[in-house]
Amino acid sequence: MSAKIPATTPTPTVIGVPAPQEDVDAIVAFVAGVQHAQQNALPDAFLDGFREDAVWTTAHGKRLTGLPEISAFTRKVLPPQANSPVTATYTVDLILFVRPDVAAVKIRQRPATRDGGRFLDEIFHGQEDPSALMAAHPEAVPGTPTYFLAKDDGVWRIAAAQNTQVFDVETLTAG
Image (tube, rainbow, N blue to C red; front, side, top):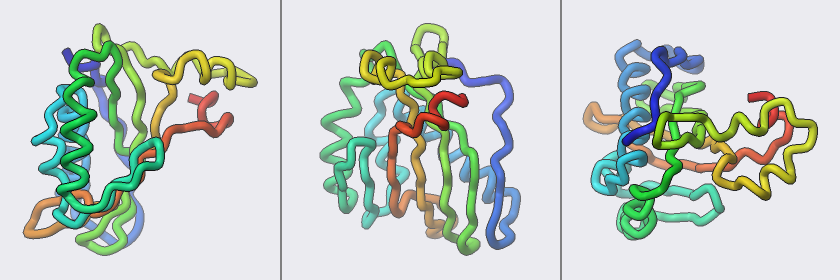
């Protein structure tokens, strides 16, 4: 079962060169597709979102170059996640249109339980020093990915991405 997604999805901040609303909507839908693929451990659906020449850096700093390398890694690590009690939600916070066909997309990635969608990162909110909680509950540390998307033949795909865990105390504790 997937984590519950909030009833209303916040509208992302959109900056940069002018872009049609249909591209904003397509990017939000793209990220929702990434969430679906991750939550349901669907490697093929996840990999469909990458260009052949993409570069992906995992949350732990592993650089993967090209779709064959990204695919091998994804097929190894994603399927076992189907049995995990923890998943994540993805919300588009900001879209920077560098050009009409290139966008940098900032995402808020929140760990959540599969059985009801309780957000695990809430344990950090309001804490002065969450370091002990971070060490005791690494599964609750949220992520802040950045996707660099390119629109090729009318389809948005990841050209490069950096998936980063949140360790900044101010960001982590603010919620």
